[in-house]
Every structure is written in structure tokens, then in C-alpha cells.
Length: 258
Image 1 (tube, one colour):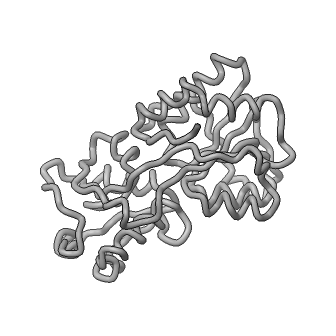
Image 2 (image 1 turned 135 degrees about the vertical axis):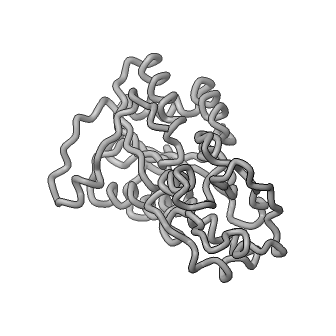
């Protein structure tokens, strides 16, 4: 987890919170990517810079926060969202170059536990999730704004489990923050992407949500309107190439880009 010295993360949230002008030491291409891509983007950054000679800057956060920053004028060149909804909003607002948009990745959501001895459970309507929590919290990304949380709530609702645990859910600003709560033992259980769970050996996957219990998990990518530089075009091409595909696969993503 905090072992990504090569990845330069831009502090947009701080800049926006104090209404400061956008100011960042951007590279040739600036990419806004969902926080669940943290580990993968470290590999992507290194490979892209080695292959092209371009300088890449990456900002990682919840897809909703990144989309809002783009709406407010943050100078991203490429956006990779953890669900199509936020990408659709930007496209409807004329902020994307629609010709560059494509579906890049897929993922799964899982139930994780902090206890290394936690037993696997079947995620069905018969699960007594409230009893499993035993008064503890269930960590999830924001269920109204962040894709991982939206998918998680949809799955729990589909399985008729949401009502029984809604008051025990602690919501975070992005999925990596939810992972962190479980990793540190501050919440005994959480719902995150399978790729997040694989990146942290202090959590244990105890259940996989049925894929038909929530909308398909798709990560679309697109260039930002008016920022169609050669470096941005090269990055979009790189994302669809063999080196990027291999990096994403190593992190557990399903690569769906043509």
C-alpha cells in the first residue's frame, strides 16, 4: 500500500477546498483515475514514460470527486472512472471527447474481513449479515456517490440485506479509504473491489457478490474535450496496448478494451 514513490498524486481536493486557482506541476499528460486503480497506475506510469518519453502525472480519488473537479475546470487530459455514470455526466456536459471513449476494465466486489481466521460466507438472502457484524461496522465507500459504494449497496439491496445493516455502515470518500478501515481493524468488515482486497494482505476475502446482484462493473476511459494533445492520444493508445493490459491483469482487473 504506501509503496508507490513513483506515483505523483496531485492534491486537487486541498486546492478546491480553499478555492485556490488550479496550480500543479503537471506532466505532458495528466490523468485522473479512480482510487481503486492505485497499484495498477503505478505500473502504467512507469511503462508509459519508458515507452514514450512523455511525463505522466496521475491524480487518484473517488470517481465522483474527480468528475466534479473536471466540471470545475481541473486540467485533466484523460479520465478513467470506476463506473459509466460519472463519465456519462461529463459527456452530457460536453466535457469529454466522445470519439476517445472506450470501456477499459471490469472488476468484482467482495466482502472482506480484518480477522485472518474469518470464515467464508455465502452472499445470499439467507445470510444474517447483522449477526456477522456483531455490532461492528461495515466499511463502504459512499453509497450515493462513489462507484464501489453504489455497487455494494445495489448488491446488498438485491440480496435483501441492506435494510438490516444500513445503520452499521460507515461510509468513506473512496474505496481505498474503506479498505484502510478494515486493514487497520477499525471496521471488522467491508465491501471493496476484488483488486483492492488483493493489494492488502491484512484483509481476507470471505465472500464474492454474485455478478447479477449489481450493475456490471465497468471502468470507461476518455480524453477531456479541448485537451487533445499528442501526449494524451499516446496515453489512450498505450492503455489499449499489451503492456498496459498485462499490468491491469496482474492487479486482478478484467481487461475488456479492444
